[in-house]
Image 1 (cartoon, rainbow, N blue to C red):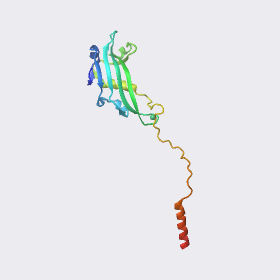
Image 2 (spheres, rainbow, N blue to C red):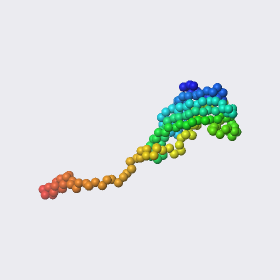
Image 3 (cartoon, helix red, strand yellow):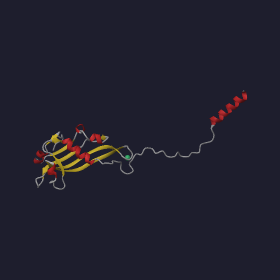
Length: 174
Ligand SMILES: [Zn+2]
């Protein structure tokens, strides 16, 4: 267990040692996620355990979570989203090996070391909804132009009356 996540990992070695990676991924390490969200509210947090199951399959199992802001596709205002999921990755060396992966595992193809942030971002991008929106009733609709309330306007217009008086005076004095 460690708080400072390494930049790159060899999942095979970690699986062999039954390692656990727990911590926050600094936002500076993220290269793709910022293009898909309007703000990152919290740095992605992972708690991943590595191991080898009874069938000899190397795996990563744990959780991933992050808070992001995206643009609501209904009201076009920022909308906060909590991304979170259980991760269950079967580590394989090739596309061909993906076919033999036991059900319940998502494939993670890795022959050796890889950049941890890449794998974290892959998982988070999968969690982003295609059509993000506020929960029902939560949209901040822009003010809709409703027909102005019909108001009885007082018919007296004191200044017009004054002007009328003034004009009359002018015409009388000329
Ligand atoms: Zn909305």
